[in-house]
Image 1 (cartoon, chains in turn blue, cyan, brown, orange):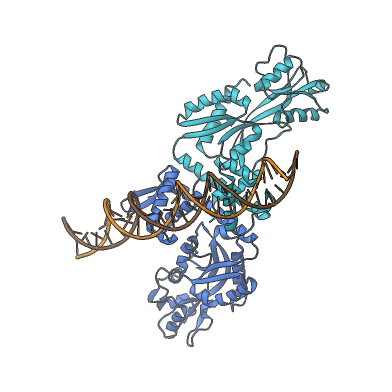
Image 2 (cartoon, chains in turn purple, brown, green, cyan):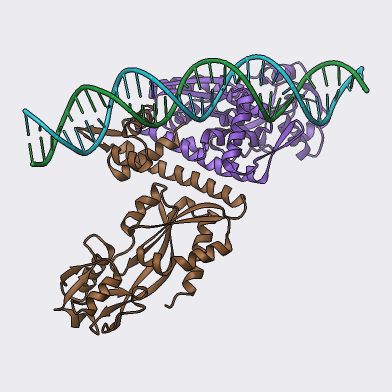
Amino acid sequence: MLDPRKLRLLRELARRGTIAAVAEAVTFTPSAVSQQLSALEREAGVPLLERTGRTVTLTPAGRLLVEHAQTVLEELERASAALAAVRGGPSGPVRVGAFPTAARALMPAALAELARACPELEPMVSEIDPADVSGALRAGELDVALVHEYDFVPAEADPALATEPLFAEPMYLTGRADLAEARDDPWITGKPGTLCHAMTIRACQAAGFEPRVRHQVDDFDTVLAFAAAGQGVALVPRLAALAPPPGVTLSELPLSRRTLAAFRRGYGGHPAIGAAVAAFRTAITHLPL
Amino acid sequence: MLDPRKLRLLRELARRGTIAAVAEAVTFTPSAVSQQLSALEREAGVPLLERTGRTVTLTPAGRLLVEHAQTVLEELERASAALAAVRGGPSGPVRVGAFPTAARALMPAALAELARACPELEPMVSEIDPADVSGALRAGELDVALVHEYDFVPAEADPALATEPLFAEPMYLTGRADLAEARDDPWITGKPGTLCHAMTIRACQAAGFEPRVRHQVDDFDTVLAFAAAGQGVALVPRLAALAPPPGVTLSELPLSRRTLAAFRRGYGGHPAIGAAVAAFRTAITHLPL
DNA sequence: GGTCCAGCATCAGTACAGCTTACGCTCAAC
DNA sequence: GTTGAGCGTAAGCTGTACTGATGCTGGACC
């Protein structure tokens, strides 16, 4: 019988590309991962990995097995979720990931609501960059996470993950009435590789110009402070612009940011996930949107 | 992570009812099964078994988990089958179960065809009573089996097993032109509990009478010999009546017996199963039906 | 060309999981 | 009361799966 623990390693390898990365994700040594994958190959009777120099790639048979591993692992998780549902009310630790804005604006109210509704639940919140959420969920480091997507920058579609929309908020432009006016202004964006960065660039491109980026700052409070200091214009979501510093004018744009809850697909039926998402929703109703 | 080996034991328990029976089916000691199930319960966090005196029954949570176990195990088997398909042509041992009539009439030609088409395959045939086929397939003692069903006696519907129809043959009545004429005759049936027995009883009931059973014999050659000796009438399928003894007349009835190939559901894609079923079909074309 | 480093494999050693064996308990049948 | 079937627990052994150390390969950089 194929061992799902080994299948999990294979799936991670398909995702991460190197044995070392898999080892780090599951907190094993690379040696252990290498041995387990070799054993899996032996059991499978087919080469699953191709060793070329100091790198490994999956063979077609390996990719095929990854597909099956996917469904097996999902189904196992579904079984766990069903058991947890039977076990009674949600209880035990739930690891929650949240991007910084949400951690600040939404989490306190959500945690209070969660403590009220499910006192047995022990939520553990980690701030996490949305770009890392997918990997952390898959690796089992997180159980549920808040992520967001912008117009022009959809959330990563991962077959192993499911999402549930929570709310949408409009985007604001600082200093100017619309994007066209800001065509020649200096811009303040997030750091390259972040969603905020991509969002700003793409929105400007859609408006017909390439933004001249002067500052690269991730924290929206800092962004607004820079804007107040006349350092440039920026796009900020409603939640980050509830109390703009004096001297900063905000114009609502026909752009939005959507916040979603993400979790492993098979885990959706888990009562802890349901309770957490419900608490998010309750907290949202208290949000000044 | 839930261990599929333990899930398998739970599934077997749901089917067989006692730990001792599970142990026998998987060739463990009852102690090992007990320990494994206890461990599974501990991991699940919910009571799965209810111990009442010297017997165990599944709790609702246990039954729920069995459902999931079913799909997990099926999916694992599907993965194995996919690997076997990649591995190239069918090879290795295939355990084939067949009821006595089929073993005699069909198997020689089917094995010859299989040896021609897939020389790497090592079929191992066991005669087996159709009533035991389901359990043997589930326990992994057989990979594919020939079973049959009669009008009025459909094949057992097991969610873990899939079937594929192979051929149908008419039933014959010995001595008389139709069932109504045989209303008051003594009858020769299979032994109680067999499909043949049930088939005869139900067919007579459908014709409006209760057969008077005199002899209980499973082997159709013996049945025909009894009929030739004037000991009564009987229903026999075409395959068993190819060379009736002198003095036995046969009348075709509007009843049929269907022969099917059965295998574990997840195993259907396995090339060895496909090759075996194909060989059965080829052998059937040589059958004087 | 030599050096360094990243990445994987192999080997030896160890810890733990899972099996068997042996034994005790409970309950039903006789 | 005795017997036997059925399950659980304790003790012991084996094999699996991990870590840590070592060696090999190939690319980058000087």
